[in-house]
Image (cartoon, rainbow, N blue to C red):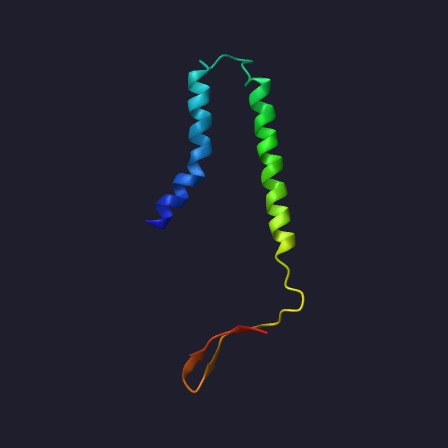
Length: 81
């Protein structure tokens, strides 16, 4: 089931482009409106900014991760010191 969901999300932009292309009537030289391009660019910039902020705010400084290990035939959970 998970593979189908991943395939759906992968194919979604291509299907959206195909729908736009069909609705535009396949006219050569027909381009999306300037407003649509600007809004898409703003969305991309906001997405990159949010991902950068999240990545930089999640710091591992001072945290030592100890991975899970096997002791006496059992699994001991990893910890963060």
